[in-house]
Amino acid sequence: MMSLSYGSADTQLALDGLRDWATLQWYVIPLLAIVFYIYAVEIKKAKQTKNWDAVICGLTVFGMDFLNETWNGWVCWLTQDQAFWTAPGETALRTMVGWNIEIMFMFALNGLVFYYMLSEKKETKILGIPNRWFWAIGLAAFCVLVECFLNLGGHLTWTYPFWNRTFAGVWLIFLIGYFHFYVACILILNIKTQKNRVIAIASIYGVAILMNVIASIAGWVY
Image (cartoon, rainbow, N blue to C red):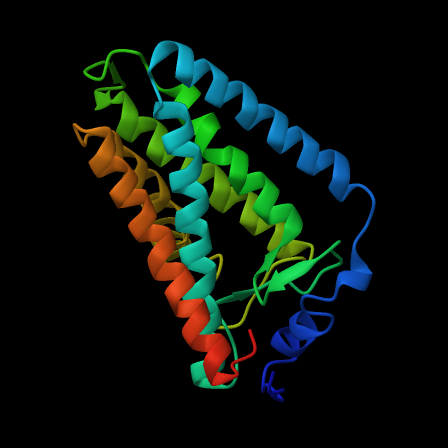
């Protein structure tokens, strides 16, 4: 793949060792086993109960994160300077300029966490807000808080002046960084047929995969 010298020091640092399998650490194996085990249990439960909502939420959030990291990488290449966010800190495997294996494991489970926070009754409200939307707001806000701490530690860096810890910047991170993950879950859960749910999820992954295929053919590095 073509190499590129980026203007942002953080971006350049995040690209060092990009998709370098020599950086892998053994702790990845038990983490992978935990994710596999949890999904195996959820799939078994879904087969028994015919309720696939937990698995749907899990796959939806991970797919949305995959899509998010992909367009962030496109920004990095198209500007030939910097992405909205980069992950230059130590990692067992950096998969994209702003994505690593640890983040991937977390978001593989994040959608399941969202599902199990939901009330069994869709109409249930919390503080006057429909419970699905309450937890979508709550989890997105928590993710923003975690990202702010990661930024303070230099593990997740921001370079654009509008993407920061100011009031306006935090709202932007909330809306573009996380909230739409859970909105996608809610919208897909509202779809009546399982077939159309699968089509919706496949579309999310399809767009992300297509964007990465295009980038790979073009020789883009992110």
